[in-house]
Length: 107
Image (tube, rainbow, N blue to C red; front, side, top):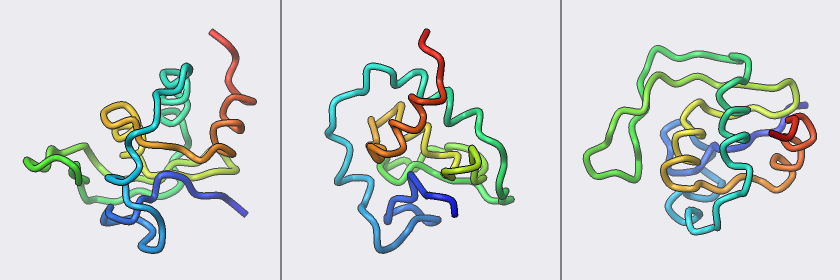
């Protein structure tokens, strides 16, 4: 069974019973955030959509790009998660961070 990360409740494709992105952007940056973002970008496509996603936190609703769901075989996440991680420091589950760190070689 796969685990989910980054499906914030205020996203159109989010988990409506989860936490909202706006409420969870105040955590300190991770020291290895660049490596984690790279890991997120390099997931395998699990599902793709023809639609575009827009920034839910920006009044101008900047277009982020096409929506897809990526996976590493254990976890899966929407493609806009890396955008929210880099722009707003969106939080990630501690279990997911540990998982990524166990798979990423130190720089």
